[in-house]
Image (tube, rainbow, N blue to C red):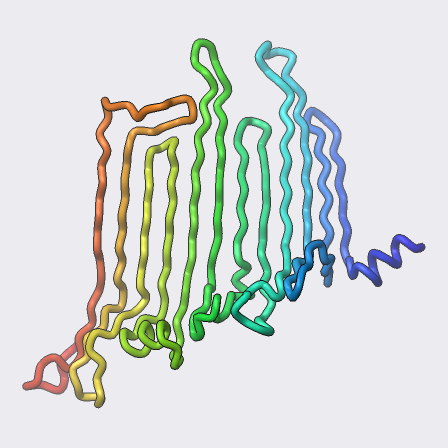
Length: 275
């Protein structure tokens, strides 16, 4: 039929599934996949195409035995998007895939996320030749606690960002300095904030730093194989109903710098010393 021809030949949708369950919890889910590229946004060289999508809906009826019980509706959306022409400082850059999703459990918790698919790193981002963003993800969670008299409703949020950059040898200024001069091969970053728990965390870790590079195999070398900076802050939780932070609790801040160093050929009187 015309619909099947469009799905299979024109839209390249090779798999389309759906499921409906009826009971105390009624649920409906649908998913399509295949060699799909449904363009939904395009201007200039930039194109965003939907390559995979999934939707799930469920509704749980109120429990008649519990007077305060209410019906709950949960939504789960997920998609994969292919981007081309996304870097304004490059021409002909390789496409990347982004995974994104949104969900709500019907009990006051909403989640949003998107991430760079690790199979398609962003190479030479914004003109930084020799650099690659291998990992990037953002997760945001919003939790609403309903009002229970005499207490009003409360809202909390939590955010997490994870990123990984790698550097290779190149003649470009910044990456040449990072890789050739310092020997740094990667940078991992983690940032998270949870205002319900009152915690903020920032972690940055360098994969490798060559402080002293040997010219010959017998020369002294000094390498920091792992260097980590960790900053943590714990403060009294704040929700959307508060205008000031309570003063009855203290704010704690911790800063830690950790690393591991490897020395080679450090003893000039011996040629068999261990690293």
